[in-house]
Length: 237
Ligand SMILES: *[C@@H]1O[C@H](CO)[C@@H](O)[C@H](O)[C@H]1NC(C)=O
Ligand SMILES: *[C@@H]1O[C@H](CO)[C@@H](O)[C@H](O)[C@H]1NC(C)=O
Image 1: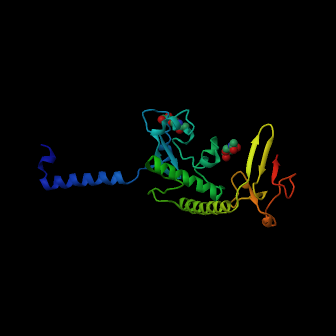
Image 2 (image 1 turned 180 degrees about the vertical axis):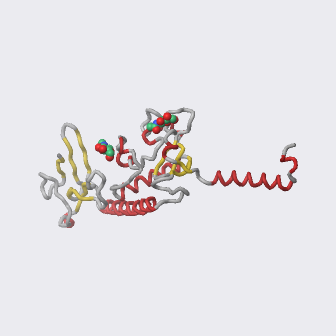
Image 3 (image 1 turned 90 degrees about the vertical axis):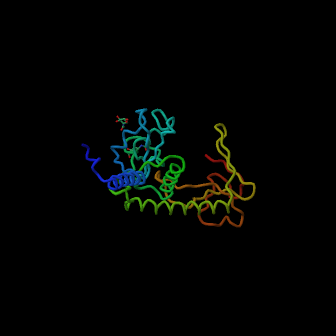
């Protein structure tokens, strides 16, 4: 005789209830992944979903198989957390890492923006235990540091935008035959550093902006090489 038949009805109901609750709990609790487990969901096996990690969060990108599957432009991101590559564009060897060491705050902010993109368009599928989440799935110090750095990057970007709204950018054109030219309808072209931090490449971001006569004494304005102080257009080599 089966054991179940002997159980009082109340107890059986209770057991069923507990089973349902456990199931609900499992559904609510995001699944925790190791990088090794994640690695088989890289799109090569058509029977498996395609998963991608970014900042330790996992997303199901199966509906984007043409991009994330083999041969797709984003295939490098599948089955791993290659957060750094979202800004470095380095998809070879150690370039495919989740380490953000040495990136500027604006670059880190750009990766956080990418995560937002996945949150909005794809299905969240859990967290990776490692650099960004501990074995309980809680954010690590590293993740908190990244979030803070991204916030600073976002502020710098805001500042950059405000400044660029105040001082218009130069017009510009470029052709293979004639090279580049920048010019201003009103004011004088000057090369200026954008507010912001130094990028991974070591390059500071610059732009051409049109300054009025009375502003030309400001520090940090560079006259284009070979261009007259009061010229309204300059050839760019
Ligand atoms: C890609 O996934 C397949 C199984 O789906 C696995 O055999 C293969 O090792 C994975 N490739 C990498 C680079 O992890
Ligand atoms: C990509 O990253 C690896 C490891 O950091 C480095 O050795 C390689 O030079 C990088 N490639 C490019 C194109 O930056």
